Every structure is written in C-alpha cells, then in structure tokens.
Length: 441
Image 1 (tube, rainbow, N blue to C red):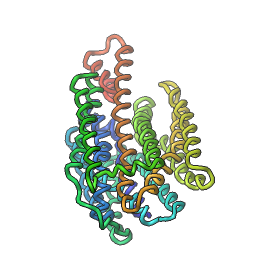
Image 2 (image 1 turned 90 degrees about the vertical axis):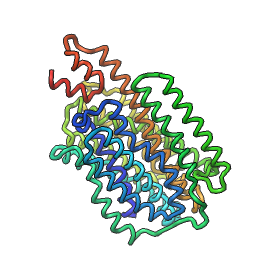
Image 3 (image 1 turned 30 degrees about the vertical axis):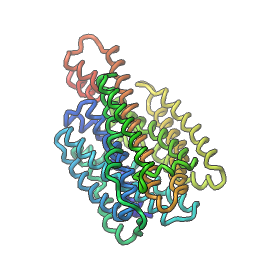
C-alpha cells in the first residue's frame, strides 16, 4: 500500500509544484497567457486522454508492469520539463508527463481492488491513496517553494524523482501482478478516436479564450462531438472494447463519476487562482504562499481519512450531500475575496471548500471500482481517474479562460491614464505580465 501511495505522490507533486512555479517560468520563458494555460493543463488533458487506454492496457499486459513502465517514463519526462528552454518545449514535455502519468492512477486503483476485497478495507485503502495524493499537494508547494527561492524554476520538476526511484526499486518486490487472462487485443483505432474526440474540444476552448467566438472554434467542437459519437458506436460494436460502456448501466457507478467530474472541474480553477492571489496580489514569496495553502491541504487530508469511517454509520449519499453543503459555504466565502480582504477569508473559504469535497472525492472511487467486475477493475479505475482529470483540466481550460476574459475586461476599464503603451499592452495580457510591467514603470 505504501508503494502504491508513492505513485499518487508522483502525479500530485507534479501538478501542485507547477502552480507556484508558473509565474517564474512564464517570466523566464516569455510565455503568453495562452501558453501559460497550455503549460498548466496540457498535462491534465493528455492524462485524461490516455487514461482509458492505459486502464485497459493494464488489464491486458499486467497492472504492475504498466505501473513500473509509466514510472520510468514519468521520470524521463520530468527531466525534460526541468531543462526546457522555451514554452513550446515545456508544453511538449508536460504532454509526455501526462501520457506517463496516465499509467499510474488506474494501475494503482486496480491493484488496490485486487488486494482488498472487503468493501470497508478497500474504501479505507482508497482514502489512504487519496490522502497520499493530497500529501503530494502539501509536500509539493512547500518543497517547491524552498526550491524556487534557492534554485531555478526547473528544479521543481525534479522533486518527484526520489519517489520514482523508490517505486522502481520496491515495486517489483512488493506489488502483486494481475492481468485479465481473457482480455482481447487493444483496439488502436479506438485509441485514436478517443484522442481525436478530446483534442479538438481542447483546442476550441483555447481559441475561445484568445479570440472569442470564431467559426474555427465552433467547427472544432463539432468535430470533437462527431468523433466522440463514432467512438461510442465502435465501443458498442466491439467484442473487446477499449471502453466497456456496459459499466455505465450501474447507476451508482455513473452517478459517482458525474459527481467527480463536476467537483474537480471547479477545484481545478480554484487551485490555479488561489496561488496567483497569494503571490501576485498579496505579494508573498513562493514558500510563504505554499505555507498559507497548508490549512486547506490539511483540511482535505483529514476529510479523506475520516470520510470512509463515517460512511460506515451514515449512508454515503447523505455524507456526500452534507460535504457539498460545507463546500458551498467555503465557495461563498471565496466569492468575498478582493484586493483588500486579506488572507483570513481566503484561507478559511479554501479550507472549507476542500474539507467538504472530501466525502465526494474519497467515496466515489470506491463506488466506481467496487461496482465493477474484478476483471474490469483497471477499466473502472481509469474511468474514475478520467472523470477526475478531465474535469480538472476542463475546469482549467473553461473557467481559466473565463477568468482571463474577466481580467482583461476589468483591467481595460481601469487602466490608469499615462501608462506607457508597452506596459499597458503587457498589463492587458496576464496578471503575471502586469506585475512584471509594474516593476519597470
């Protein structure tokens, strides 16, 4: 179990250190606002795009084997990210990280389902795995803050290397292997269709944030929808589909997936904007910003660990609903944050939002994996993580783009008179560019 937690740490650390490093690498590499969004969420989109493929591949070739292959690939891509010399190189490296990361989550969830057959133990094991993910959220920003204050921004991508090495050393010794002996061949056409359905939609959201509603953006969305429908029809016709749509016939599984998707969609953009407020509005250094984020991380880890225990006495659906009420309270507090509100409202609202999300995030994977046949555990685990990661990345793309539009509209309407044209143009681009421009005026 400890070895499997290392895998969740790898994925988590890579997400959360980038949040703090984004202002530094954007200034150093000269990344535009659109490139910043690509750097931030290409990882999540490639992760989501390949999760279904990797979950099914793990069922076929062996879940432990795929986990170890993905871990080694993750390390190589991390090194490439650390030493990127341009926004384009970093975007490509982050894409490779996403593909490698797609092997980790479904493999670990599937192995947990094989190791713990008792529902109570399996639920608590998944909560420990989720707590490991949030542990990475705690370790990543703090260690990343120390690294950013003493080294170049690329050093934050090397934080996960020790965990990767431990996983490669102990994984073959401690982890059981499991594969579906009756699984058919991997349908490469379905793999291509799944990516071709997702990527045009991503492109359209990027273009919408940059150029507004354009014919090309609308066409890209339509292409993605059409290919998605073709993908669904092909899965229904195949004897051994890449995505077994029969899993969705289980109402508990499909409802849990929907809850994960919309929950993480909102959390993704909050996680992007909170560090920006701490660093660019409050003017905190990266380490101090990371420390101010720790209460929310501690609140969510606590919620992850106690939720399965409470769920033994309270029906999970009621517990999730109660948690969402707490999250909404936190969101209402976050809505009151402004340039003069200080840190108390922000930290309290963020902590309540994370604490309330615990039951939904912890109990949903168990509902998804637990309601799937054992031979489909890898596919079910990939579905769980797909809803998580795609929701997270879609939130960054859609709501991140909305935040960019709101910022540009507001800054245009409040631009002081007499600001030099070059500085004014940079200020309209992003808040990072505005901060840089302010130091030169």
